[in-house]
Length: 72
Image (tube, rainbow, N blue to C red; front, side):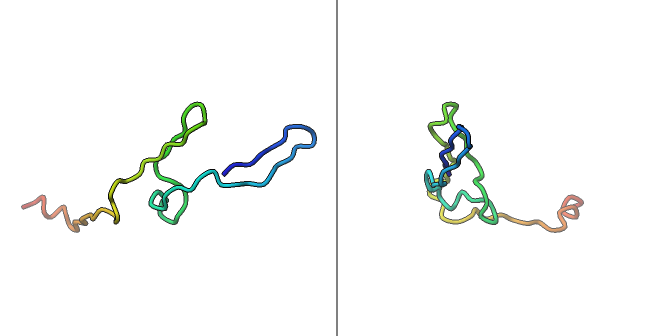
């Protein structure tokens, strides 16, 4: 988001506007924020880590009672 401000007296704030739309896949659980991003030192570019060719979350395995497996 971007907003114009006037630093003269009185301080004034303009209307907010979107700068760009980021891919929805970058949202954290709950749809808030973006996981990996940065801005260049000059403030001219935003960099986003975007998964390539991944349409679904990677599968994971949950191992229950893993301590008993160590005793074997």
